[in-house]
Amino acid sequence: PTPERTLVLVKPDGVARNLTGEILTRIERKGYRIVGLALRTADPDLLAAHYAEHVGKPFYQPLVDFMLSGPIVAAVVEGHRAIEGFRSLAGATDPTVALPGTIRGDYGRDWGLKVQQNLVHGSDSADSAAREIALWFPA
Ligand code: DAT
Ligand code: MG
Image 1 (cartoon, rainbow, N blue to C red):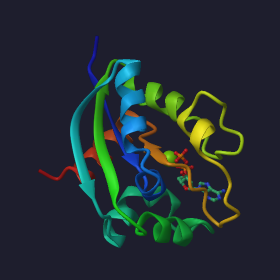
Image 2: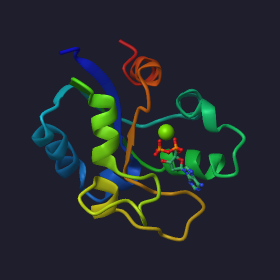
Image 3: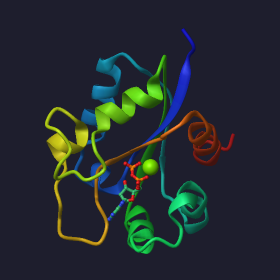
Image 4: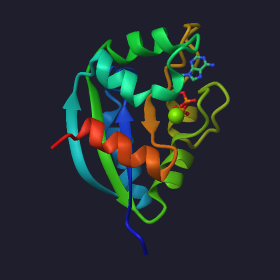
């Protein structure tokens, strides 16, 4: 098996709602290993790099404001097919339609804001994972 790594973020809504433990527990219970963990506050440059693909979209500034609104827990999660597996565990981007049983489906909802506050981030490809892990864990 190829040990693959993905970057997971518990976003400010997840930390503020005291869901960090629940989210990390689900990752561990699925069988992945947490090999890096940090409580961090983002800054605009970090977010511009992290969300480079979304710069200029209508939800970009609300997304940045949200991601700056409180501390974030960043984790490096390891396991065979961990990138795909965590995306499955997280559920669809829109928490209103994310399936029950997923993190976003069980704990998320639409708050009527300009950004989807959906509790978690997970890298979407091996290239994204490598880039994002280097951003959030520079050492
Ligand atoms: P994901 O986080 O599922 O990979 P994404 O990369 O397309 O989704 O978008 C990044 C984040 O931006 C997402 O978690 C929530 C927010 N977002 C995406 N599309 C949005 C939209 N149409 N309206 C509001 N917020 C959105
Ligand atoms: Mg994404």
